[in-house]
Length: 622
Image (tube, rainbow, N blue to C red; front, side):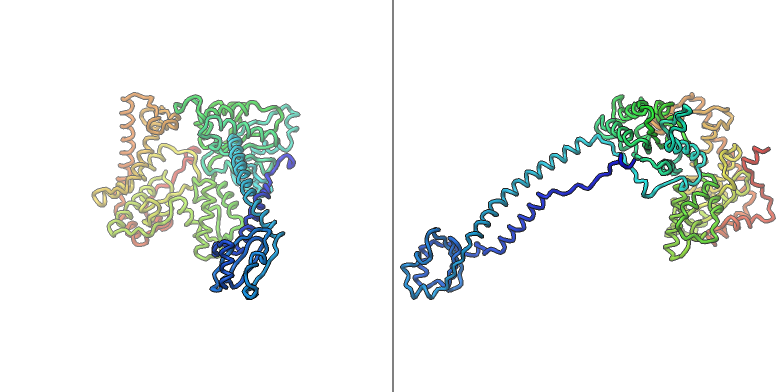
């Protein structure tokens, strides 16, 4: 297998380049060492003879045809003689006593002059040749870039370095079981071909962002020990039509050459969106690229042992032809991790980190419902950064708890200074949420109440479920809506008016009510879904919403939403009014401490009858 994969080698640099540099250095050195003619004055040979006759010359130096003259006042001059003339012949008319008083030196440099002349003749020639060679290489490089424009940009991962296996992937048991077949096939394909079985040509991983789709694909590559080509869907599409299709052809050509192997296309929805969706023509670049992918996957020869894997978090926008049997015919759902999976993921990312002995990852996993694998990795990293910032030797439980709140809610913003009145309003608002949630059986238990700002919120009421729930009943949604309105109602009762701090709560309550009516059938309008949600992704959520109901039904939908919200409002108002004294006590304590834990909050309800919390699992058992 290794013999098939040709790794790029470093291209040696041209020796001509170094030759030109050496020639320039030598020339510069000779020019520096040579006498600078610019500092000397050129004179005629007759002038030179007159100066000697007048005893103005101090010394003479003869180099070939050049006569360097130094006058009595140290002025430098030079003159040229005929090659056949000698100095004695030139100064023959000068009296002997004058000539003997002049320092004379004759230097024979015939060989040196030859090489100097040769060097000064060759250097310009070399520079011209070097310039033309450089221009030709630049043109050739541009031509190569133009020719490689349609080549695939897929990266071949190095399996020996940072090798990923299924041991590095916690949770996702069902997904790993599905992928084990892929690994087994790549290792021993005859085991399946003898039974007449065909391994799927394409496997698509579907899941929310951060659930580990790319990690699973790398684990398959590491387990199977085969070449792994990795490319993003957006790398196919370019401005010019046809480039993406060319890159697809080149990618599959490389894959067949290195079979058995895995081709992994991340974020395939960037190029695999449904055709004819209303945006772009039928011959645009994206659709050309998608057509080529469909053709290549359907045109694989038998026994090529090339498996195409893809990942997306938007399977609803993919073209149906891409998902049909024979292409991406195996669909593996990578779901959000449950509490056991979260515990395993935390332990995987805690490897190599100094974790305190009293850290219970089961408890941390229970406090992180809805966290993806990427969120949990970020959680451990934030805890390590926090511990290092405080010069600790180990990562403690407090570090992990602080990182949970930072990842889920945002960093604590202690620089925001609230006035006494604002702090009182925020405290009553948050206690209103917590009080309503605590008194309603279907709401999750209160974990923490604080008036310390986090993210965009001036205060936070944090509730955590006792167990992971996949289903929500109508009663639970109604009570969650009432809890969301608890702060709004509290401001109205205590202060006589509301602030804009309740805007996010009103948005949440309205959204819950709208989903109950239009999506879940939890209203008097009956078990009907209003509006086609699948069409929203093409033209945007506002323009793409298909209104498949009349104006009369639209008015009834608004009435039902208002009815559900009003019911939650009345429920919250009743609870706050009946427990006004308790509300004041908890709010005063919260203003004093700024943060109340779930245990501290529950101590205020001693002797008060509080409904027992009910989960949907308990309802289903009945």
